[in-house]
Image (cartoon, rainbow, N blue to C red; front, top):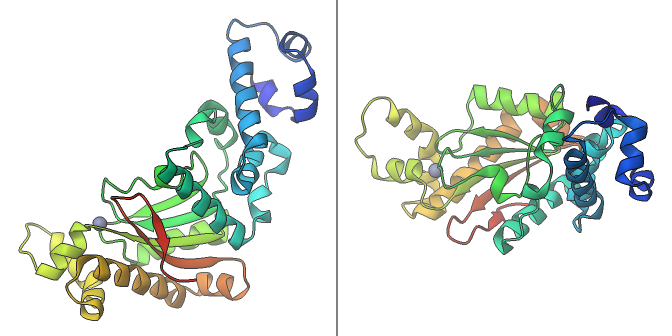
Length: 262
Ligand SMILES: [Zn+2]
């Protein structure tokens, strides 16, 4: 069964070959083979026939192992476009990522990942990052902390994503009704170490005031700027045009992700 994934995929050939002859020539008969084949065909159709350029480009990497560097060929603009188009599908209720074959995705990413985008998001359960961008296994490198702010560890993680894995765009994404930002605004008395979040978010409150959404947007902008400025790895990639770092805001009611800067 492994060989069918490892062989060089020729989409045209597969479309012209009947399932029986294809497998009689490449695999020993197994009860599950025809289901695997049907599933794989669906995956190929999705990846090749997808209406969105970003989806096609991303999908092709998994279809054709020989093009494992597909993501490195994406421009930051194309990577951003893939996220934007994915969010449009999410808002419209036309998710396509669930139709991809997860078994094949797992197989092709078991030893290597090449996510095309990174997102720094809040830990909030209403912000499921892959879902709202209609992405799946291996596509987005996600870091999350309540209040979506940068720390040394978060920056290190995003540097790894950009410098080693090759992410082309980093979104620093705030969201509506953020509990961490709200608690900071109100200086809420909280148990344990929860208030350790406040100093990171306070500059946004100082700048934007006590309107929750405005403070959350200001926080995303401040954190994105911090990331660009405090990481030499990130700033060099940005200067070279190999990476975009942008602030964004997720409206948890509408599902829409808005870019806060160009
Ligand atoms: Zn939040």
